[in-house]
Image (cartoon, rainbow, N blue to C red; front, side, top):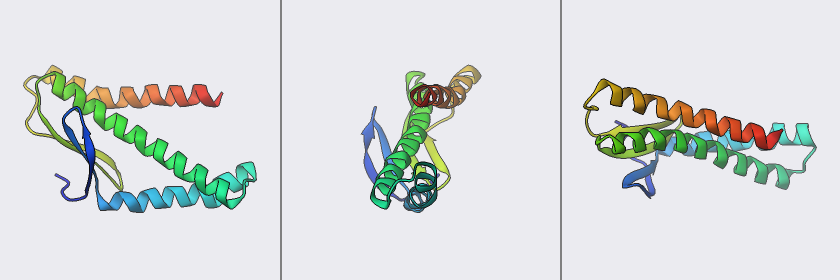
Length: 129
């Protein structure tokens, strides 16, 4: 599993960590939004674009965390222990201590994250519309 990184807290008894590579992608996403997207789309000045870039990046990575957290919460509710969630350059990963006891448990765990992402997408779309 993904080792190392910075502990940022615990939720539902699950250790949350940021791998060092996360800072690279956070910076790149923020920079891309602040340097190109917000100024060209809305004509915003640099401070406003940087602030919006940081907020948007935090919301994006918050949604990645929510996706992984739902995998883990479903695992916990079904009796499968979860060690940690780590965010890194390519997204996030939940470290499950043992295999689920039944195939249906595995299916529920697998589907929880994408369903969470769909719900969040709908919420953000609704806010935008």
